[in-house]
Image (cartoon, rainbow, N blue to C red; front, side, top):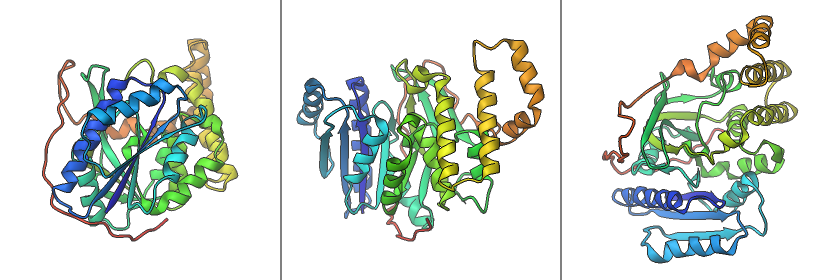
Length: 344
């Protein structure tokens, strides 16, 4: 059993990065308690050509004892951006059973990998396993909110046996971050092809478009409440920096999917119009009167959005005080292995 963890790093807070690495290290140790034939590699794509950044990363591994089998640090010649950096990370995996891409400022629960292995053995036809629990935290690890999607725990979903493609397409992104996903190793070439083909301008929205791309290619998704991702909210989050520009990225991504024959023309038009509607409603420069008028004229889009929106499917899974310090929960799982069955 081999797992590859891919991290893209660009001038981030080094303390966030250390916390991520320590969470991965702990998750790796948990797997070793149950599986003896286990190999874990961490691939770090340093997208900063700053020599000090490279030295900081190397110092972390010199001063700390990480119980992983291999650590690859790849420094880009220049700032390639998140899409190309993720692609480079995937390309540098070799014969891996699973690969997990995660951002530099998030981290995972200690049972993230062992629970993934258990679920993937139980559901051999799954291609992508999705952490259905996301816990939002501050820069100081204080609890903000927690979310999960109702009614889909441990259900194998694809574009044919559920409305999941339309939920993503018309209701918006059902996941918070790329770190919510664990991919089967045989998806390597398909995802690398996606990153090579997709317009670089959608950077920041690429995990949403990737989700639609894989669903359009008949991949089976398994959402599970047994996996927990900690997502950090701070002023450097891409969503805060980009603001309404995110909608332009979504539009470019949806157009790419249509041109790639992943979605139909009807799906492309409806989803594009919904994105434009949401963009106008969130535009601070547009008056309230114009927003109301535009919504009335496009009431059918508003209804479609509400019907498929993730807001209708989400609920809190933890009740904690605003200033609660985050601690990883501990649960035990038995030894499992993964079947290599694939469907996409």
